[in-house]
Image 1: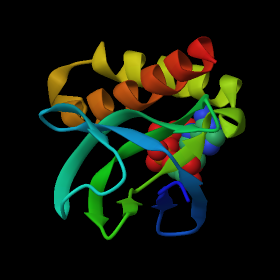
Image 2: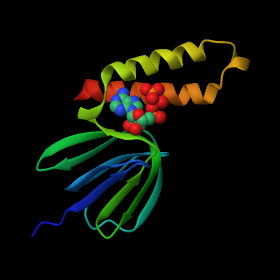
Image 3: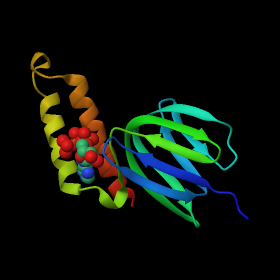
Image 4: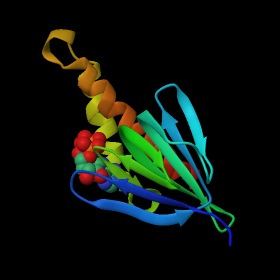
Length: 134
Ligand code: ATP
């Protein structure tokens, strides 16, 4: 029998995904890393970006807003503040979030939490990019 990985993606309010997969590629803070079955136990911090996984010869995408990945006994657990499967991303919402973030970043530095606006911009851009690559 072929060995698979159980991929679980969890946010504070829901279980986004729980599926047996063949491969997981995740956006680590030091670059993308890949997990195949029988991987050694592993813990990594994630950055905002796309996670992808392969199942039955197909690649699927999930947006991740940072968080942590834990690998243990053929199970990959992703804990993220927010995550959406590509098909659940709302295009208009992401466009509006991008516009808001860009406006804030063009304002006087004193009146804006720049790091917050930059993170919001990164989330919106990755959501839009993921929709484009679908
Ligand atoms: P917004 O300003 O539109 O809320 P955001 O980047 O600040 O965008 P997050 O804090 O990352 O939003 O997420 C808040 C909640 O809204 C999460 O549950 C996330 O999954 C959901 N969410 C945010 N943007 C989208 C989107 N474009 N499509 C689908 N769900 C989204």
